[in-house]
View (cartoon, rainbow, N blue to C red):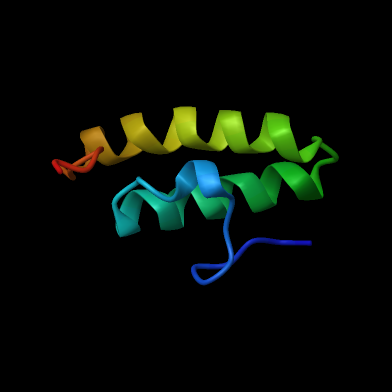
Length: 63
């Protein structure tokens, strides 16, 4: 089942919202290509962080 901004993997919980949204988009695209959920999540997070950095966005929470 595709993830949304309201329902996403726990491993994306600590990502800033804009980075999480990008990771969700990437993960959903990977699922559509046949990747399993675990691998899709890991790849999506790994790709969303550099994407955010290239766009001058914060890539992690500062709590």
